[in-house]
Image 1 (cartoon, one colour):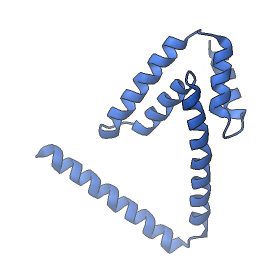
Image 2 (image 1 turned 120 degrees about the vertical axis):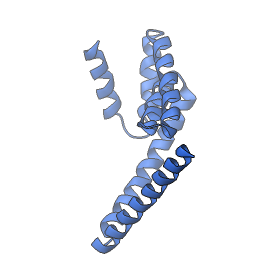
Image 3 (image 1 turned 135 degrees about the vertical axis):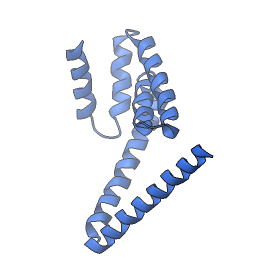
Length: 132
């Protein structure tokens, strides 16, 4: 079982960005209905848990991503959408990484400080809202 999971992950990781999810979908389609219900159920549960963890403590975005990826194994349309999203997300991340490297140290310190202040203010507002 674990060897099969490792092989699936390796094939997913080695596929080209923009084609990963569609190839994953095609591999699962070739295998037939083996484990389809379990995958769909687990994917839907992860999406629901991810949505809940967006407002509760926990890795909400991570749960959403893994849940949607599992469901994409059975949905060609969702697999294609995730492939397009992956390419765009990589482009945005590369642009942000480049801009971060170009910034000087004082600007980086200012940005990190600002992010900390925004996060702290959000946490304080959530805390006061929960107490009230």
